[in-house]
Amino acid sequence: MDATLIKQMEITATKVRMGIIEGVYNAKSGHPGGSLSIADTLTYLYFAKMNVDPNNPLMPERDRLVLSKGHTAPALYSVLAQRGFFPAQELKTLRHIGSRLQGHPVYKKVPGVDMSTGSLGQGISAACGMALSGKLSEDYYKVYAVLGDGEIEEGQVWEAAMFAAHYQLDNLVAIVDNNGLQIDGRIKDVMSPYPIDEKFRAFGWHVITIDGHDFNQIEKAFNEAENVSGQPTVIIQKSIKGKGVSFMEDQVSWHGTAPNEEQYNQAMTELSAHLAELEK
Image (cartoon, rainbow, N blue to C red; front, side, top):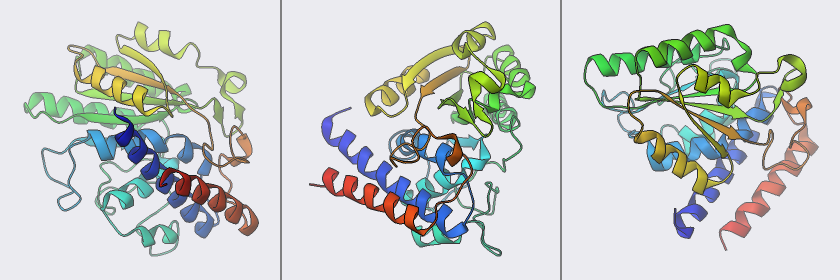
């Protein structure tokens, strides 16, 4: 990826992070940590990789994305708003009564959302169904599923992994957001899923490991996944929970906590300064 495109991706991802903070602050609840850690990958997918159209969000030939870790909806909403699926001002209504931006994504209520998710472990199964449907109907869309590293402690994830390999779903790409933290602490202490790469490899997946905040590595991984035949691909992205906001980074307390006014102002000041530096 050339330097100009990387800079544009970084600018957009910073705006996405600002939207995440805006939404969670106005909701007075939500999950900022894991939303911030997937902002770069979602930005790349929606702005550089996926075949989507904000003016026709349900077009049959679109690529699909399933946010299996549905509690990080603020990230998906912010990316969709930046991409033009709905006005960014609407992010301030997150989790409000009457808002279509609920705490977890709702299919056919929010433009650009391809699957209602929230119960951890289930989204990847839905993604498998979408991918198999595409195979059977000879449609050439890709299906992307974003999972949390804590989420993969769920047994259903591994049933889906077995299913995807058995049916050779090479149109399916899973992204495991390996930020190392879940609601109760570090994943290695709660219920270690390590080694994640070897587990997926044993289930018959093509495995790629990257730095989830490096756009060159992100692009290379998704391009590699496009050329894999006969098996699904998993991209394990090493990331930082709370990425982009100094006091949130790698802090388990920000898994599901909304910032107060002082914290909101500090976070937005940091992100605004970073955006201004990038836009010079």
